[in-house]
Length: 175
Length: 290
Image (cartoon, rainbow over all chains, first blue to last red):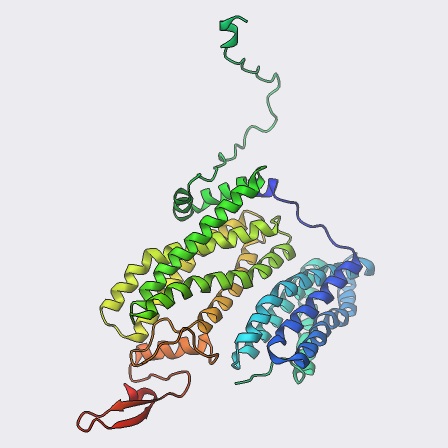
């Protein structure tokens, strides 16, 4: 064991369900609002509801197929454990989004080219993909095929949500 | 009191009757951070693992706060001095006031980027459940920035040499970018070592750190431009207006370095050139100005 591991503060334990959900929601709201910061109050408000719609809504929509995939792959996790696991991942995603709010605000205020769209999309896709992978590893470790199928479904769901929200995206390019 | 008794050596405690159970693994002796700022910076450059070990001990010691505060001052000083001197070498390509501008702006790039990235760094570490507090994460990021600045300082003569060879605006920019890549590799070595000591997910967290830091750093350098000024620019501002972005400009620069006939400014430029026989001022645009 390294000195760091022995003397540094222990890793934070899993949060209760309600706190995880609140953290996920707060992080998504903060990130969305920050992404619209450079484009006026309306863009901030749009970002503040669209980002939770994407992340929290996506998690809720992907939950039932996750339970099916878990049961078909022979996992013994109960529905309550699955919900708790997804909420924990959502909470950690919220922490990441909360941290990314500062760079999002920075880019929103200073980047005024079409690259801003690509950057925002890349950030959202990266965080979403990491969350999907984390849930998949955690809940579907017993069945590789089920993990792949559910992951593909979750990614498709995310893309569908993104497309549905696309015409509301807060980042408008102003030259 | 007997003088002999007063000067007696303290008794050596007797060896424990039962030997410790785990004697096979002997961890490497922990290293304390050296007291002086120069020695600390030398350790940072020459022995990143030793520096990280010292940082661990400083963080865990009872007077860790004072040590970390003093170390923070040293690291900030290294960033300001190292990056500032590198900036002055970049500014020397144009000369005059631009030397002063770049001496101020290059350290600002690192410091602004660090401030913007501190929150995501702490968030990534917490989300990955690394046993690192916010203070350790920020200290590690600052130490990486200081190593970056020190390597920049070490490679500043290379940039000066390139400027002396009159290789042109675009090639000097590519030399600066190349030097930054080398310095970034040195800083990344420290960052990844520090995170890998904290757990198996440290490398992934390090990759996320680097991605965010590189993007924010590129954008910060873009909004604080110009650094290497085009030869035909008459008046050099401290910063330009918000237009274009770093990646687009880097692509243009790379194409121009390969083919000097290509020189596309990020915004349409209208300038005047004097024709030799008549001295009449003729408006020109883009590459025709050269």
